[in-house]
Amino acid sequence: MLQELEKMKETANRMKIPPVYMGKWATASDAEVQQELEKGTPYTYRFRVPKEGSLKINDLIRGEVSWNLNTLGDFVIMRSNGQPVYNFCVTVDDATMRISHVIRAEEHLPNTLRQALIYKALGFAMPLFAHVSLILAPDKSKLSKRHGATSVGQYKEMGYLPQAMVNYLALLGWGDGTENEFFTIDDLVEKFTINRVNKSGAVFDATKLKWMNGQHLRSLPSELLIKDFEDRWRSTGILLESESGFAKEAAELLKEGIDLITDADAALCKLLSYPLHDTLSSDEAKSVVEDKLSEVASGLIAAYDSGELGQALAEGHDGWKKWVKSFGKTHKRKGKSLFMPLRVLLTGKLHGPAMDSTVILVHKAGTSGAVAPQSGFVSLDERFKILKEVDWESLQKQQESPVESAVPAAS
Image (cartoon, rainbow, N blue to C red; front, top):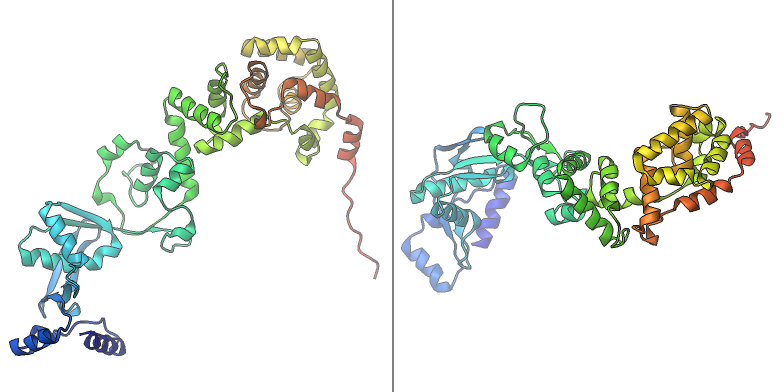
C-alpha cells in the first residue's frame, strides 16, 4: 500500500540506507489478502528476491560486478494498472529474441541485477553484458541538450557526414591500439573489439569532430565531393545553372580549408570577394604597402589595361606562369616580394588558397557567368576600377603616422 511504502522510504532515509521493500504482503495469510481484494485495494506483482547471498556477472568492459541481494528487496514486475515494468519487459523481450549481447550505457548497470534475477527465475540463458561509459561534456558533466546539438538529424543539418560521426563516436573510449584515428565503416567492422573499450568516460570534443569530418569530406571520391559542393552552392543561390565547370575548379581549390559542407558557402563567397581597402589599412599589410606596393600596382594596371593579363589568365596556369615570370623580371622582383604584392592587389587579401588558381578562377567567374550577383562577387574589371582609385599617398601617410597615446596629467 502507498502509505506503507512511504513509511519504508522515510525509515530508510533516516537510517541512511537504500529503501528496501520489507515484504509484508509476501507472507500475509490468504484471509488477509482476500480481505484487501474485496475492498478493491490496488495491488502489484513483485519478484521475490532471496534475502541472503549475492549475484555476480562478468561484464565485458567492467569485469566482475557483484551485488548483495539483501540490498534489493522484492521489486515490482507489474504495476497496479496491469502494466509490466521495464526490467521485466526487456528481459522477456531479449530472451525470446535470443539476444546474445546487451551493450548499453553504464546508467543501466543497476538494472542488470533485477534482469539477471528474472533470467535465472524463468530459466532463460543469460546474455553477455557490456556497460559503456557515458559521453561527457567539456566540463566532465553528463552530455545534455544544454551543451549543444544532440540529435543525429541536427548534426546532418550542420553539415556532418554519417561516416565521420560514426568514426568519431567509435573513438570515444575505444582505439585499435595504434595512433590511427581515421576509420571507414568497413575498417571499424573489421577492427572493433569490445575488450578495447575503456571503463572511463570520454569527453565529447566538437572541435575534434569537425576536424574528423573534414578528413572524411576530403577522402570522398573527387566527383562526389564536387557534386556535394555544387549542389550546396546551387541550393543557396551562389551558382547559376550554366557554370561551365566552375564548380569543379572551385571545389578542388577550396576543399582543403572546408571541414563542413555548410562551410562551402562562406569559403566561396570569401574567395569571390575583394576587401582591398580593409586589407591595405590593416597593420599586417604595413610591410607590403611599404615595399613600393604602389609601383607594383601601376605595372599591374598597365598589364590589365593592355589586355596582356587577361590573355594570360584565359590561357590558364601556363599563361599565368609565363606572365608572372615576365612581370617579375620587368619589376626586378621574385619570390615573396613578387607574389605577396600580387596576391594583395589581385585578391584583396593577404592569405588564401593558391594565388594562381584563385586569380584564374576569379577570371573564369567573370567570363562564364557562373556566379549569381548575391554571392558578393567582384569581377576583375571591378577590382581594377577599385585599384585605380586607391590614394597611395594618403595610405602611406596613414601607415606611417604613429599611434597617439594618452599622456598622464602632471601631479
